[in-house]
Length: 173
Image (cartoon, rainbow, N blue to C red; front, top):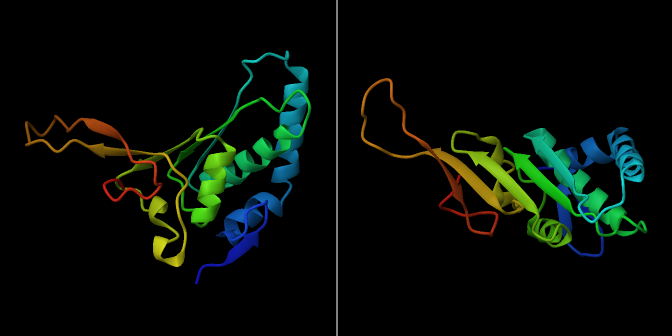
């Protein structure tokens, strides 16, 4: 069993990995980041073109997921910032929560998330799906094109395949 935390944010049944959750919520990371973002936005010129992009790799991708959720929720409640879109870009992200959490993230971010995975990276396979964990979609899977060998010095080109929107496309990763 992997340790999980039940969270409530208007959606019953959301569960997330406790280690990822506490890495964001039980440290100074969350208050430091959220305060810095508000200061940055307050110092910026108010325009309709302001955007916030959150990114992370591996463990940082899991933390970035919580960061994007909290920032999108927080900004929606601050007058003048309620229309600032939050984008989530992750690289080699593990599964952070269950399917209800993944759906919550997708709706909250209005499907403004992209999850890059590499065909030889094991991290996106963890924690296992059979324990109830589910990826946030949309996945872009990086893998080599299968070609017959041309020469020892020429490698196969890399393909970036946009997977279905399920978060768990069996044809990817």
